[in-house]
Image (cartoon, rainbow over all chains, first blue to last red):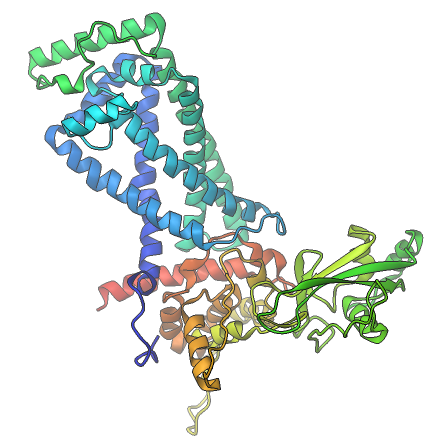
Length: 274
Length: 290
C-alpha cells in the first residue's frame, strides 16, 4: 500500500502473494502438468509392446548424467513448490458446498481434495518406483520398505511387477484419476486466473474443452496402468524381461548405452515378486 | 419489490397453509459473546417477508416457549433490495430479508425458517453485523472517480454507449455482502479491542488486518467498473496495485459462488476474470517497464 510507510513490513509470503500464486498457477501447467501428459503418454506406449515402452525409456535415459539435474530442476522442484503452495491454499479456504451446492463450487472443493490426494499419491509413487534419491545407502533402505521398484533398463517388467499388489493398483488408479482431474480443472481455472476466458459463455466452452481433455487423459492414464499391470505377470512378464535383456545387450554392444547394472533388474534369477 | 402477480396469489391460496410457523434465530447479545438459538412461533399470514416476521417478533416479546424474549436486532433500510443492509443467512443461504418471502420459504421447508447473521463479519448483535471490511476494500481499490477539484478541467473524455452499458450492471452493487458470505476464500477477520486501546488505535489495527485480507468479489468488480470509466481509468494503475497486492485478485479460487448468490445478478466472475487479465498485463508491464 502506498500509505503504509508507518506500518511494519509484511511477511515475505504476504508481500509476494500475487507472484507466488501466479507462479503456482503457471507451475501447475508448465512444467508439472505438461510433464504428467508426457509421462502418461509415454507409459501408455506399453500398450503397443514392452519394447516400444523400453525404447522410450532409453530415449529419456539418453540424457545420462544430466537426467537427475533435469528431473530435479524441471520436475521435482516445481512439483514440490506447487504442492507446498497448494497445501497453503487448501488450508486457507473454507469449502461450503453443503450450503451452496453449485457446479463450480463443487469443483472448487474437488480441486483442493484431488490436489491433496495427488500430492500424497505422487510422493508415494515417486518413492515406490524411483526411490526419491539415488544414493546407495538410501536406496537399500528404500528397497527394504517397498520403494525403488523401477529399473529403467527393465522398464515394463519392473513397473508391471511393482503393480501386482491389488492395493497398490487401486491406489494408482485413484492417484491417476485425482491427478488428471486436478490438471483438467486447473487448466480451466488457470484460464480465468490469467484472464484468457472472461465471459460466462467463454468459460462454459472452456469447461467443455477442459473436460474432454481430462476424460481423454484419464483414459490414457488408466490404460497405461492396465497395460503395465498386464506386462507384470505370467508369460508376458517373462517375455518382457527377455526382450528387455536382449535390447540392453544389443545397445551395450552398439555402444549407445553404457553398461549400468543399477538400472537393471538384480541378477537373482527371476525375481519372485510378492 | 414487485407485487405478487395474480397467478402467484392463486397458487398460494391452493397450497395448504399452516396456522403458524417457527422461526429459529441464531442470537448473540454482543460482539465476542457465544451465540445461541432461539425459537419463535409466528401466526401465519399471507405475503409476509422476513422483515415483517422480525417486526412481529419484536411486538410479541416472547419466544416459542412463551418466555419473555428481547426483540431481535436487525438492520434494514430501503425494504426493496437496493440498499443491502438487511442481508442475512436465511435457510442456509445468504440473501436480503426484505425480498425473502415467507410463503416461498415455507414451500421449501414447510414448518420452519432459520435465520442467522452473516458468518464472514463480526456480529454486533443478533442479525446485525459490521460490514466495515467491505467498505475498507472499496477504499483500497479506490472505487471512485476523483473529480473533486477547484480547477475547471473542461469536459471529460467521451464515453461510448457500449461501454456505459457494460458498466451499468457493475454499478448496481450495493455492497450487501452476499458474494463474500458465499465465497469460500473470504474468511472472517474479527479483532477484539485490547484493554487500554483507544478508538483510533483500534481502528488503525483493524485497517491493517483488513488490508492484507481478501478484497472479495464486490470490491474487485468495483475496481473493474472504475477502470472501465474513461476518467476513472486515469487511476487504473493505482487500482491494479491494490488488486495485485496482499489479499488481491490472486486469492480468488474460482468457486464462482459470488455470481450465483448476487441479488443484483452482477457478472462478478466476468469482472474477476477481467481483473485477472488486467493483472497479467499490469504485472508483465511492471517487470519490463521498470
